[in-house]
Image 1 (cartoon, helix red, strand yellow):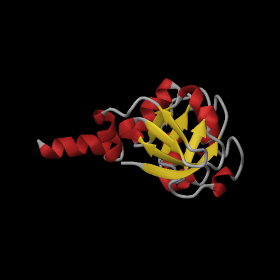
Image 2: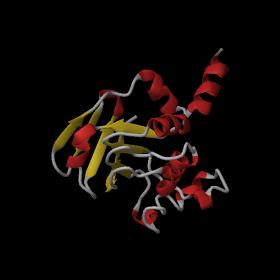
Image 3: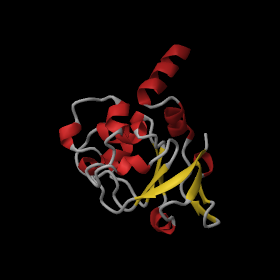
Image 4: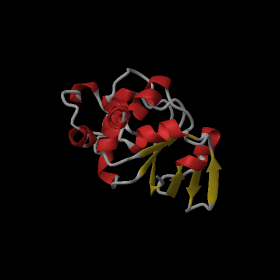
Length: 165
């Protein structure tokens, strides 16, 4: 599956408490968490996001505590993909487990500007910045990870696999 949306850029070392502050961890409801996505960075940040938009970050996105609420909040805000220079390892695993696609673009993530229109082609490892006529190549998404994303996360993926056996 490919994705197309407007880029919303944030900086380096955005931790899980900035993504969804600890005081809001009283639910796992994606819509409720999504209403407060990135409110630890900027109150009301999510109001500028439209369903299908793409979050673009710098280095070490998702550092901090190991909470599944962070990728759930991003998904709940309507953002299906995060492109970043790099991700904290525990966030990386949690994101895929929850069904959030991550694309690691290295230094090329800096070329994307806030408001650019992006098209993400995970199977090719390609990020097209239509605004800047720029193609960014990163590692393609392996089929096994693509299957997890297509199923909406690891639980959905396991249910699909068990249902087939």
